[in-house]
Image (cartoon, rainbow, N blue to C red; front, side, top):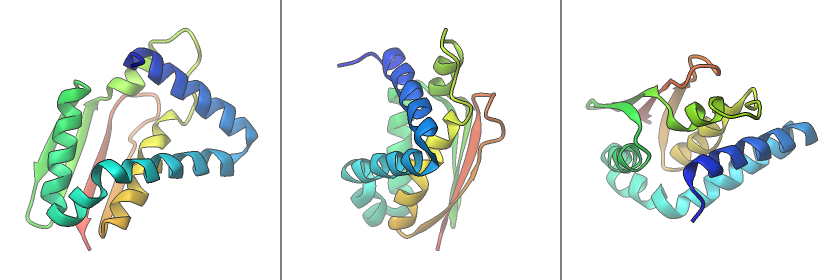
Length: 139
């Protein structure tokens, strides 16, 4: 398996390459990532709803060592990424980061969450700081 440091750098270069080809190619790639993620979480999101999303992102939080807070409410959940490990690795790289690197998260998450029947609101805060927020509401 490829180490996460190398994977993130590879991702960054793929995003830069696709961005040079055009916005459509970049968005199509993020949609393809979203389709592949359906294997891992679409059924979980549909059957367990917000609880399933908390379950999924709690696993990601632990697996990727994310400094992230997850809050649960009756009608929505909130994720607050205090220090994104992915962007942190891209910023700590001798190659320049793709300016819109952070856009890949909502690029794959939003279509998947909507497909599960929920309404996401993503706040990237800054593309130069490794932090963001996402709220997901019941429709």
